[in-house]
Image (cartoon, rainbow, N blue to C red):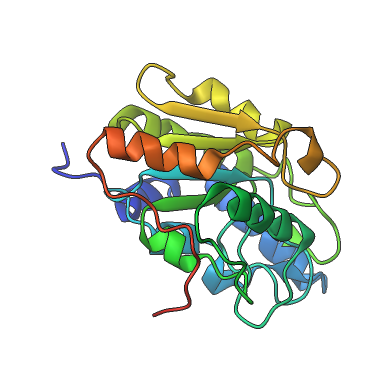
Length: 226
């Protein structure tokens, strides 16, 4: 029995399994055919690098990475400094402006500071082909991220899960609602943000839940730091 579960331990176990090896094989085979895959190989697992298992307070579940050049870097909804804000992230910032006092829309979409505060920005699918949304659906990533959420559900308590859109809401079936908080609404994309996301107040609600647990709240103002 391990003393304290870490993402490194979790990943080391999964990487030995045939389904996981198959995912990486498929991705590499498509690259060999000249297909561009995002994010870069070194960034695929950044979600686990920037948010330790111990520190997870909030989980925001996305669908799959952005499929434009230079956008995806391993954190759901986030883009690197200098990259134009995607429409979905613009809607996230729009909701934050109405929900969080003194929030100002930053000139970047880099959400690493959220990750470092305990917000796990987890896509359901961790890779994508250039210009093709959901092109790596059903190659095994969904099983991997199901297992990720199952592990959080089992070994943690009182995590706040934000499930935006039907794809993320499917993951809600894995979560014990007696142990954790679930905040569910439509996806922040331009197609669906008007159907519940705008006005959902998930960010202030998450901080309220954290205060009730005597935990440090999340500073939702994204900052570019180390």
